[in-house]
Length: 133
Image (tube, rainbow, N blue to C red; front, side):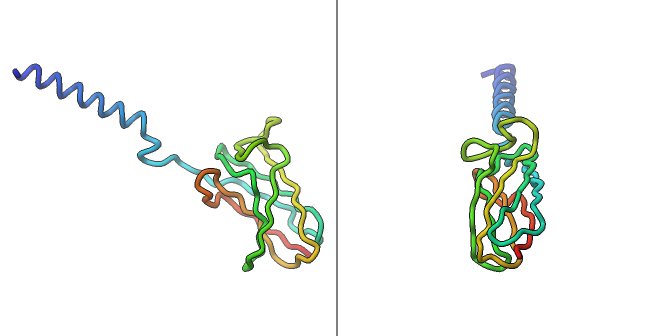
């Protein structure tokens, strides 16, 4: 094989390698994930509703918010009111804020937080604290 053919073959191999890396770049490096903005009703009466508002910032988040006791093992889940399916990135009706009205337990008292997780990895994306009295 002469030098011109070797050079052409090498150039083709490099172009194919660069194309493969470019096509699979997010799988190689991992996709960038930004935290979500989570706000809640700061104080809730036991047995009442806590309003959870989430701006997912384009992330796919689970349609299952966890309400957890600070320092405890209690967990209660609830879903977004304006989201369809197992994950959400924005409300089905438009806008950017996902909302959920979650019922607290009548025997809850003290500090709690709403936890929002990424859809596929269950990585914590954000949390907001509230008090139940």
